[in-house]
Image (cartoon, rainbow, N blue to C red; front, top):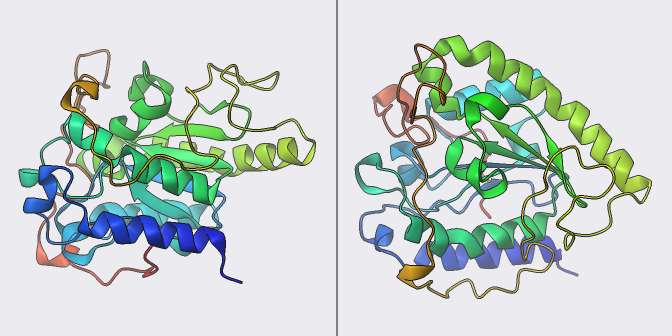
Length: 279
């Protein structure tokens, strides 16, 4: 009998590769649905594909990917043991920020992936994915601080590209990664004890440490993957994941950083990916 998770993820990826519901398909080389273990306990969500990702059809395969692999190794994981995806599945032209409509168009794909994998921990990389679960958060203030709902934990982290542009942030990134395993262990225990029930509660239950994210269709992805949202349904744009919107948003000395590895386009970035599973 076929693994339902694999089947669902393959269906989502297949539709994503041929999707034409927003204009990003016009300039892409490859859609980048995501890659990793369909039974992963940890789901990483970035912003969008960069140049190397667009070429290879895989997420985080350039310098940002190398840093992500380094961080995973530090906590005893490899990229084939987690699942990695982005809020948008096609590279925005000139590495610009994804628009609200583009994010909304890709939302059912991301919700379908989350529902199929049913991870214990969701790690957001950068502000665009953070905004989905921490709508009022500032990455420089809440990075590494988990919150819980009645299904899983959510941890906001800096995008690896931000570390490449501002290496002084790397110790904070390492400390945040080290927290992931402790949070994962806690969620495992909470599920085993029956403290985590389902995904429909908004309040987060007695074990929530912070306000829980709004409920989604993740339990059973029922949103048509090829349904285009209306332009009026999109929210206001969020600031770029690694750009400082104000002095309160970034530490002194922080600099702008690209989406995924978009600005690191030298030949040394075009490396063979370490994990080739496509879903």
